[in-house]
Every structure is written in C-alpha cells, then in structure tokens.
Image 1 (cartoon, one colour):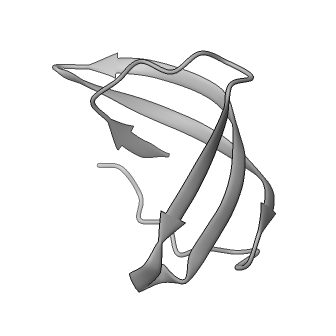
Image 2 (cartoon, rainbow, N blue to C red):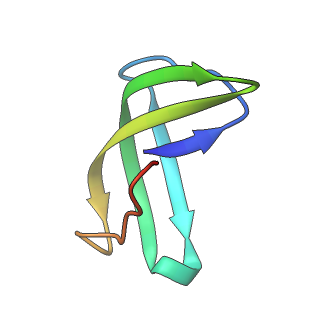
Length: 59
C-alpha cells in the first residue's frame, strides 16, 4: 500500500515511479481507504521493471 493525498477510484490505472526502490510501471487501484487527511491505496502492478518492490509493513 502507498499513501496519497487524493482519493483514487477502484480499477483506475496509475503510473508508479519510485527511483530509490527501482520501481517504474503501471498499476491498477484495488482499494482506497481514508486515513486522516490522506488515503491508503492498495495497488496491483500490471507491468513494472521491478517485479517485487520492497514494501514496509504498516504499523
């Protein structure tokens, strides 16, 4: 999951680019839940250069 300041719609396509993690590609929004003033977004990568980006656990 990532955090975003904008609500995204399920099945919306987004481009993800995280140079420090070597992630670059397209993803489909699977869920978007509000948390305070931000949104937590669950993504399914469609085509990305890095198949398994590092993900830190939410606490």
